[in-house]
Amino acid sequence: MVDLKGQYEKIKKTVDSSVLEVLDSTAYINGPKVHEFQKNLEDYLGVKHVIPCANGTDALQISMMGLGLKPGDEVITADFTFAATVEVIALLGLTPVLVDVEPDTFNIDVEAIKNAITPKTKAIVPVHLFGQCADMDAIMEIAKEHNLYVIEDNAQAIGATYTLKDGSKLKAGTIGHVASTSFFPSKNLGCYGDGGAIFTNDDDLAHTIRGIVNHGMYRRYYHDVVGVNSRLDSIQAVILNTKLPHLDTYNKARQNAARKYNTAFKGQENIITPVFKKTCDSFCENCDCHVYHQYTLKVKDTDRDALAAHLNEKGIPCGVYYPVPLHSQKAYQDERYNEEDFKVTNQLIKEVISLPMHTELDDEQIAFITSTVINFVNG
Ligand SMILES: *Cc1c(COP(=O)(O)O)cnc(C)c1O
Image 1 (cartoon, helix red, strand yellow):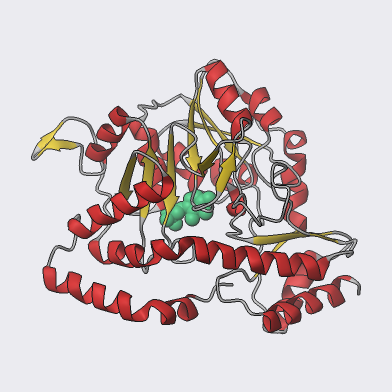
Image 2 (image 1 turned 135 degrees about the vertical axis):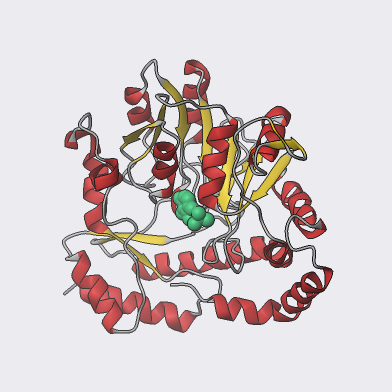
């Protein structure tokens, strides 16, 4: 699904020498390199504070801790996402409220959010799924009206741009009150181990969070709040520092691959290619509204699982993200849920299939993948 090796080969010299430099420096955790990366990412995103941490799941949890959410508070998030999002809500004793998504973008459905709000609702967690922002204009409006926090789960959309109603552009993860991201190796900006970060423009929240990631300490050995141990190490930081200047190029390579896939699938009635946000008039020629963490098709009148097996047989990796809706997962069942409220997710799990998507895809690979899919779907 990804070609981490091919990407590494191109930056190997810089990565290897900077990793060796860290080994030599013995500043393995929270050293100057982590600080340097933090500054570089703040500049790139145009956000006041980046707080690096150990992984994207921690970043979500710490964001919620920083906002002071308390057991019993309800947090609305999408039914169609990776489990990390709902997991941390539950872990903190908060009440996850899963809602349906849009059939075209796969992102959280704004009407469903509105219907799920109760007096106990404290926050909304939009997940910018597969590389494209949720409808942040509408979500921020709802949040304002109901006095809710917005925590963007930006694990899949780093580098994406969101165009607001007024035409101004913001990077994904800098629109809500706080955001989390992941540097898991296969993410658009991946390190070579685990890593994550929290973004916010709120000075007080950033201060609170900087303490939480470090055992709740604001002064050494004085623990003012209950914290966690969640740090980015210096080796990951130098790798990220090497890769960050390439992020836009990496995302362009993904967009190019997506464009070629789309062109090949044009006119195929039973193959629905990804829909990008309505504000994007061209195919990301002049914007980055979609950074294709995944290239996800919907197939109609086709046995999706048989298609996946066929692709694997032909040596083409593919993935089904996600095969089970969160509301149907054993860990997250809730008697308040009604199947009728998850019509879109229940349909998507049968139709979606993600094709290989990374920075190193070439024309020959794309031609082979698309013709194999088309031949199977047309049976
Ligand atoms: C990857 C991912 C996470 C978790 O990130 P980790 O670094 O693996 O903990 C959270 N949310 C979404 C949507 C993700 O894709």
